[in-house]
Picture (cartoon, rainbow, N blue to C red):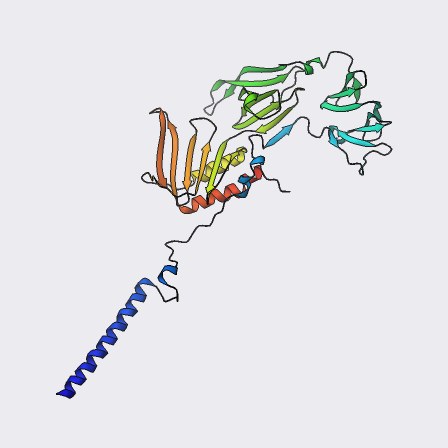
Length: 370
């Protein structure tokens, strides 16, 4: 009897060992966990693969970010360019300034200045204490007694101005903004009247383009820019800021199409979208995201990108958070108010937007040299 009990006890112990081993084997196959030698708190269990992104560094260079960061034309380009003392372009002359894209140079002789062309022909004798180009077609000449002016023709001949042909340059309000009606054909083939706008100076020359779709003069006091006039003009979807100085020279900047704000790891920065091509790219990128409607989230994650399309108070806006949560707001004409829509997109959408800002939009503010 004692022997039977001993055998029964041995069999029970063996059965328990086998059952315990089976349970441990089932747990590993279901969870996929294994003993990594780490404590439970040290284990990293990702629900999904993390998406990599980082804050665009150029957004912290605030001195480079301005509504006037993207100049596309200047009628005085390549005028009054300093010439290095060890790279003299004209034999027999000491030149310190280049005019008219290297066609003319200021030379110095006996402490006075004159003008010579690139072939060594003297265009203006060295008789002046100062010679500068104030317009593509006009030099300012200063002597001890007076200030005179010299004109430049299309063949770069120079002639002292002795009449009143350039008096308009020194008068205020010599820009004419005109509106005309022209007939155009729409997509259906019907003719329609379309308004066109022109900007002209008193010499009859157009400013930048022969006509625009719209033009409005802005208050220069609202901008930190040394100028006499600022105009906002549109042509075929492109947005321009035209800045005019006291001599009616002008610079053309591509205007603001959108504003982008980025917040990542408590680092925040914003900039404008000043290229029409970039605006189209950004619009196409955001339009490509597949949205799934969701409820409002009162506590979204901290990393986000905000995009405001346009520059008016009722511009469309989209905020994309790092986890894919989106808030879109737009003015709804039917209810006469701003309406918000909440949705989710793939988490990769956030990383794609940040990458586009860092690699493409940054080129508006950072040159290749930098």
